[in-house]
Image (cartoon, rainbow, N blue to C red; front, side, top):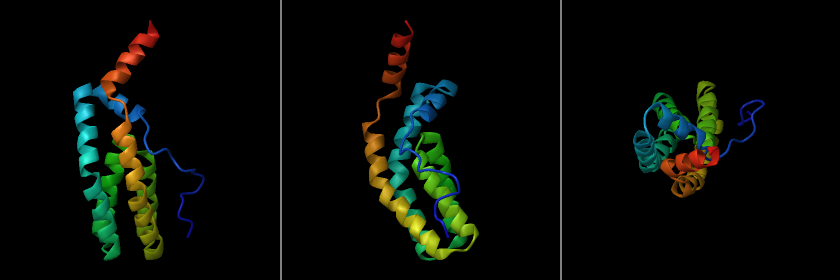
Length: 135
């Protein structure tokens, strides 16, 4: 099975527009809090995906992947979101070899995403830059 979704190239680790949109819809504080919570919970979420796939618990693996996928989308972690979608496809097809490979890809991507999250500029600074550039 081709692990990558058809017609889809690898996505970036982190895209700022998603958190910027959340800050517009809610507030900068809410978006920053969500980003911090996402980063804090990320290792446990990834570990849950890997563990449930390793024991071949399809329902819990799908639940873990859906949770990680959804929060990754909101945080702008597009590559993690993409990897979760690949895992979900493998799970839907009961292709445990592909699921194990996808879970490994998720675990391998974790340090890159953590680095991107730890070095991202604050939303307040980004908004300040946007306001200054519009003048």
